[in-house]
Length: 306
Image 1 (cartoon, rainbow, N blue to C red):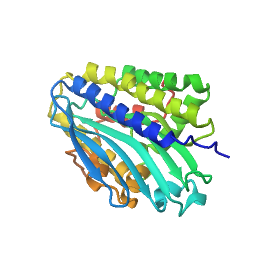
Image 2: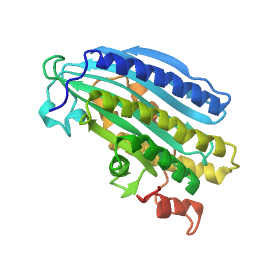
Image 3: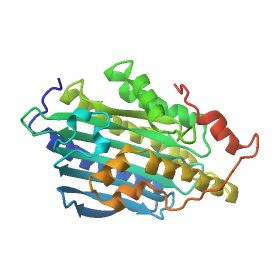
Image 4: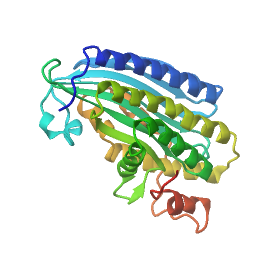
């Protein structure tokens, strides 16, 4: 049985996530060197609300968002009970931060991170709680060094909690961020976890905080080393094409997107994860032996990066 959550548990997570949102925004603005996040606060008619922060037209980031939400409802949406059917119909409270960064330069990978706490049932009456989240990387033109670095940071975040944690959450990330209709990975993975409560609240919360700090360590050096890489129309067109895969995943597969829509969240904030420009091309086939071909042939296959 899940350990009871402290009385102030939700508030502590709420406060830390707001601090993390602020820290991520300041880091991203520093990496970008020109853009600034605009804050947009909103209320949810069914209970709760949030603050969306969006950067558009920066020097490095074409569009990115770092969104905080804290919502309540009378019944958990279907997307949240697919793995926990026994909680269907229970009242819920959910607090989290989700971010996606879409850079201009095709050599800078898209990145995504999410940290969240769910509580289902009546507080003080055996309510169930669990954490979820992680971070992942979606390159168009990958570099081995970037992949190694990203996964080393993910492994380091997990290390204090047991030697099996990284392999399990890495594999879960590979399984989750996959387009089954394409038989293709979305990117090179990272960490993904859900329904996490076996360690007790305090230890699990420390893990979530460590993952949040690790994300900045993992992505920062990559964006700094690739943001000035030269590119032309060919790379830009391929980037827009690959962004189409990102759209397909988020609209067809992502449970977070479906939860947001089903819980009647703010649509503009939920769909912030989509890129500002994208294209599809019927029957596209990359030139054999090209960097574009290597993306799917070499990198979009689950592998051990550490």
